[in-house]
Image 1 (spheres, rainbow, N blue to C red):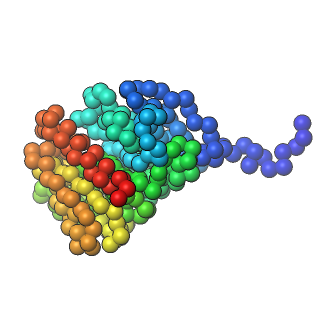
Image 2: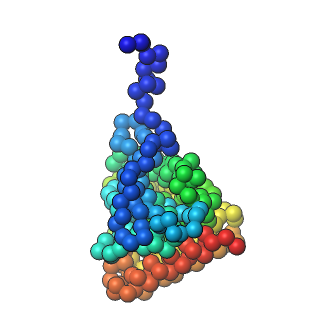
Image 3: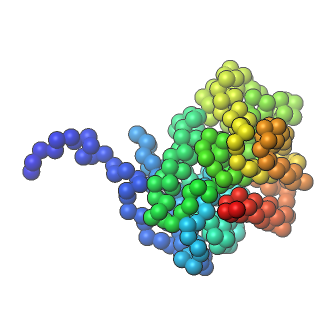
Length: 298
């Protein structure tokens, strides 16, 4: 056997954009699912993967794209989940989006127990770059990409939409300003000096100790006049992330001349707890309608 001139290069994993795609499953009528597609490698960590939900070949190509980011307080969660109230849906919400004509990339990202911010945003950006690299192969129009997330994933979806080129963003009950969040919570329920809050674990220190890092990790700090349209849905009874976080992002964007549609959801706690099934369905349908409006060529 001849010697290998560069062993490190020889042993390195292949670039994700050149890996063969997995065989498609068919979890619902008119839907193809490419499950567990690696989109990035990080040293010392599992491959980062996404699930790609696609409509069948009867839909017109190229397809608009929804890049979805799951919740879980940046500490937990799974790319297979659009929140606790939608887990029982059959077809799943991702399958429904594919049936509506979208390609949906539901993305893993490093959790805060694995890496602190901005690793999570770096991962979401890498997933978007992977989609761009394979757009022709998959029949995607990544110029028409919308980010969507719930809770912690909504925070990341907003950051992604504000730091890259996107067509729109759907924010479901997400934190938008880590510097004002403690003061917006009911008195005595949030300690900004606690290094064990979800937000502190995300940025690596108690919020009160590193206000500049908390600000840098906040979507409101990245708002700009060229931002895409936003749809922000937030429950009036949210006991984890006050709805004032949603109104704050909407107000910041509107002051810059950006279309930001804030919709208060009466009676809803975090994760759409407290809503009827029909009310959850209306939140989803409104978001799908917004996604269509943002990604339809004019």
